[in-house]
Length: 287
Image (cartoon, rainbow, N blue to C red; front, side):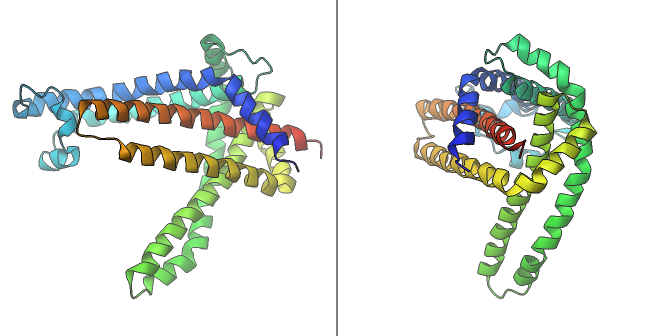
């Protein structure tokens, strides 16, 4: 199968709906600020006497791990907030995924924030239920990983030097990534079917499994190809971040900007994955 049949339409679909990545970036940035604000307040309240008057950004220079180890009660007021925040964020992430898939797969290329929110509301319960149904598949992923990693564990346990341990550790990580991408394909495909074909959750899972039974390796290979491209770009981004100076205000500002640009790039990459998966599914659905 010609790769351009799926790659080009998927990439174009993501580019024409770039606003989605921008909307998601803004909301995730807001969530991050809400999560960090209480920690910053606690640091200023509990450790403010350690700051120098001419260093208003001193909290960023603390080793937070060392601070928390030295004063383990410091985070006690924050833990309850953190638990509630994680629960609320989980619900919001489901909502964001529903809006993302809804707008990405809509025949209307025009994207507005209002339509994004409307799709989030429209598909929220289906996406939440699809995530709950996916939990047994996560258990299967864990069991399969333990089984396939068993020879690597035995090899590293019998090692007489550190090299087999390091190699086995990297191979286990690679195995976990490959398994996760394979199972993630199922969840993505279920959500594509729910949005484009108005299927309920269980019929969408049945339809997705039937499709993957004969098209799994083709779709998985395409997914891994896009993943390798995203990984290479990420490595270049990391290399650039390491080159930038960190000891100056200008360098710090550039690193912050680069980090936010990378976050925006990863959100756009997520759109590319969805677009490519959708293009492959529609091109092979009748076969």
